[in-house]
Image (cartoon, rainbow, N blue to C red; front, side, top):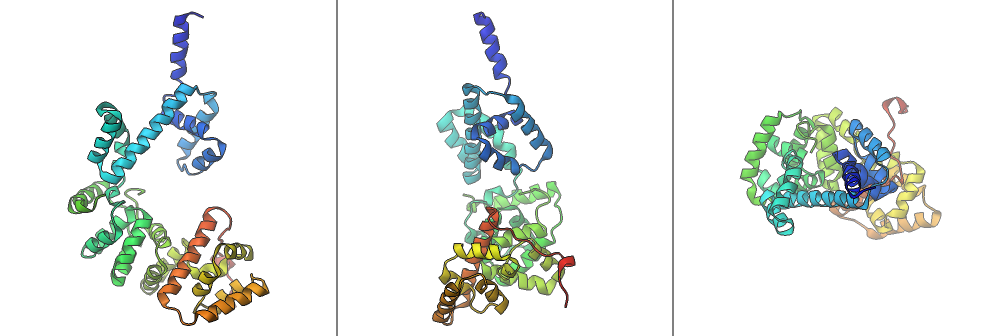
Length: 349
């Protein structure tokens, strides 16, 4: 084979990886089957998932040079996106230009521009929650609801916890009742909010909000905030309150866990935290815990609860939040399964 033929073969080989789905496929191959399978499980677009899977099957051996190009591109894009999210486009441009030069920085920003700009209120995701709450407290509850429905659920939960109880409840109701927002109107509101709250700068999109959005936020809330909002929802709209409960796990739901799950939970939670969490709870919850403990462990827990004496409600709520967090973490890792009985399965006496 002559020199020209070798060059041509190399050029043809480099054309193998051209489409975005092929680059993703190459990246997944490099990451290995375990990590790749976890990523594939989180791709919800069935057509995209099918195309990536086909590309993985069809790529064959990827040259070191091509693989390095793909890895460097992914690294650059993620780096650029993080810079934009944390400090804005100008901040990202400055840092990327210093690292890669003006020309390459412009290319990176072009790649991430559409990703960043389609996330409403992304510029608030790194703001201080107490500052946001103080600023939002005097705003129209509908605007608060719209913003909280789009920002990270963890941040939205923290903002909610800083708001007065009555505002917490009203805003939560509006999140649950939210209907899809016209993209043009949403964009206008986003521009106004960005200008108004620019001092605080450091997602599906037009259909964010709804019962599922509220449940995701409440799952990240502290126990006191969660309890206040759910009690208010029970009064205002019992059907909606039940829909939210069906999508989240609260401390009282320990009674629906199977015995194996409770036993796994007991290995995860400190006995003193559990003793505090059980103070003042219903007997059926205590019984569910006690029956899954050895006689010795059960007596130790009873002794701890008695030794504690009166406990402030805030401490009990914090302990219950810790227990629920442990349960949610165990479910997330697949170590336990939370199964709710359907209406048809419920027993009526």
